[in-house]
Image (cartoon, rainbow, N blue to C red; front, side, top):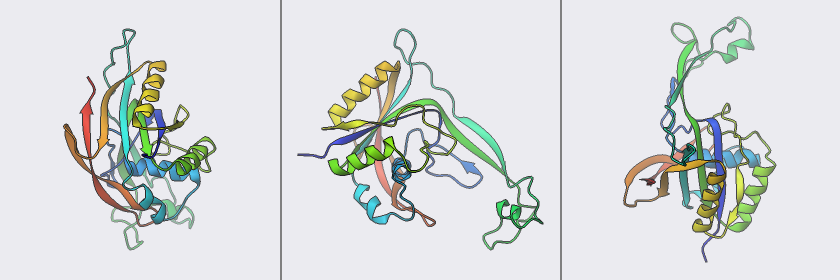
Length: 236
C-alpha cells in the first residue's frame, strides 16, 4: 500500500519561488519549487540549521502541483497577471561610521567596502494572484506531524519570500492517494471560483520536461541542492 498525500493550498496576492537567482536579480519560477515547499515545512516545524537527515527522507518523495487562476462568471479562466518586477535599493541610507548600521551595508566577500559604496540595486520578481495545490507524499505519521505544524507554526509562514503572506489555510488534509487529494483540490478550487491552467508532475512524462536544481540536500548557511526532472502539462 502506497503512502498517503498531504494537500497544501498556496494562495496569496504575491508569490515568488526562486530557483536560479543572483543577488541583484531574484527571479521566480512559474510554480512552487520542492526546496520552497520543504522550506515552508521547516518554518512550520521550527526546524533550523542544515536538516540534512530530514531533507534526505523527502528528496525522492512524490510532489505534484496544480496551478489555478481566477475564473469569470461563466467559469472560464481569466488571463494570468504578468510577472511583477519590484525595484529595491539594498544598503542605502545607512551611516557607515555607526558600528551597527555598517552591518547592514553590503560588502565584498572579504568583508571590505564595495567599490563605489555598498548601495546595490536589485530586481525582484513575483507571481500575481495565483493559487497552487501541492500534494506531497509521505508516511502518515510524518504527514500528521507536518499538518499539525502548519496549523500551529513555530515561525511565520510565507510563500517563497517573507512579503508573500498566504491568504488561506495551507494544510488541507491528508488523503489516501493522489486521486483523492486531487478530488479535494478540485472541490476547493470550485469554491474559490478558480480554474486550473497547468499541472506539474514529478519525473518525465508526455509533456514539457524541465530539469530543476531544487531538491535540497542541506539548508543553513551553506545550502546544497541536486537536480530533478518534472513535466509541465497544460490543462484543457
